[in-house]
Image (cartoon, rainbow, N blue to C red; front, side, top):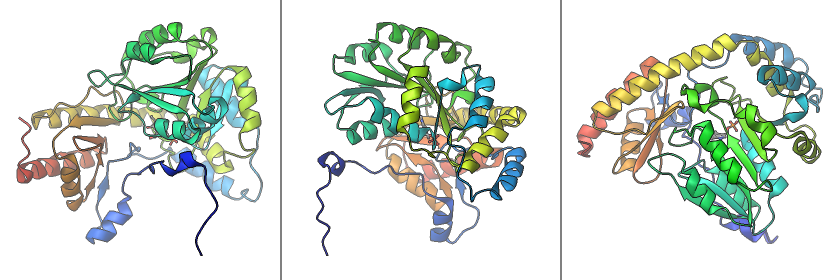
Length: 366
Ligand SMILES: Cc1ncc(COP(=O)(O)O)c(C=O)c1O
């Protein structure tokens, strides 16, 4: 039988989100066991042992609904961040928050401003709510917030600033974000997506939460998926004006964050030294990747995140050839690749295999 329920027209053109290729799939295809995935900006050290321990205990209670008010995690986050519990938004990954924020402010025909290349979910959310995407090209790989200012119109309702930006890893200083907030009308929601916050070393980046008082239209998003290593649990959070948060709490699903995710996140916050270890490894692998790629004649964008982005001809073919060698990275259109930092071994293995691929492909980088 044919499916004949008419769907909302705006859904028909939505391009599916293509996640990184799973390791198990590649191993099955190649009949190998030691493939390495440095494609999805995941954390190579995994979560703190305290998280695993807490989850084991929490498993016994999964017949109960989660605490819909997330009392414990909100309290833990509030003291970790120095904000009020009534400012905290929790989501099934910060991805869910991106969708829920769109749902809260977008009406058909509204405009959404974001950088391109940028996180693929921003145009997707725009399309989901029949809004009009207004991508603004990066300038030298970096957000051009002056151009963002020019892209604003009376129809703009939502602006995403991805800082550091995915896929380039580049960041803009807080002063530049604030200069934009000053010229942005207060009836535009500005979402500062700081998914890679913990990895940033550049001093001029911090402290977005300290300027929230001045800009009630600002929402900051962060996640436990990256430096805290909980990507599979799905938990992200936001910090917003309490009035916004109040409406958010009414419009989200009652149990949008599951109990294991909350337990895991709470335990992760009790082991900051583990997160710092992850950040330190990232810092040295980021340097190794940067040096290694530069030696191969490439010019990676100046990253502050846990991945590097570089332009290169024939990117999809190079990606495929690397796959054949058991290494999964991420093609970003026809002329760019993105690679996540791994363990020392994974990073070195990638650089060796990538050099082999470049040699055999004949792609000129120098
Ligand atoms: C910029 C950015 N924002 C948000 C997310 C979503 O993260 P999560 O839903 O795992 O919290 C990602 C994931 O890769 C990202 O790169």
